[in-house]
View 1 (tube, helix red, strand yellow):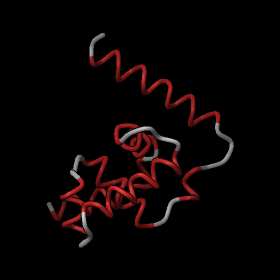
View 2: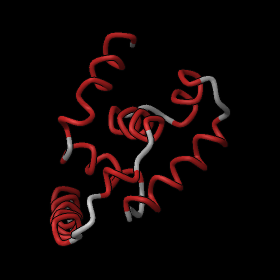
View 3: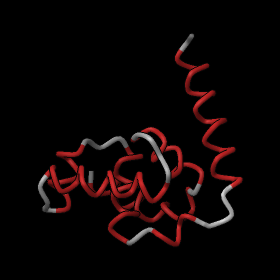
Length: 101
């Protein structure tokens, strides 16, 4: 299976899962969660995120694990895909990341 078919299959399954869930998951996210999701979607590693937020990379991993639980995501790719679906919510954070990079 090619990587594009695999990504398409994951994206399709994730969109179906997100769209059928009646409870909006955005309300469960704290401001720090939104920042970390945006940085993850931007392609930053745990260590890069930790340096920016003045936390340890272990703390970032634990926060990302909690974020995945809140969103029902299995991995970082699904979290990044979720950020792409809700781009307007993350737009300001994307701009601040790209300006400070």
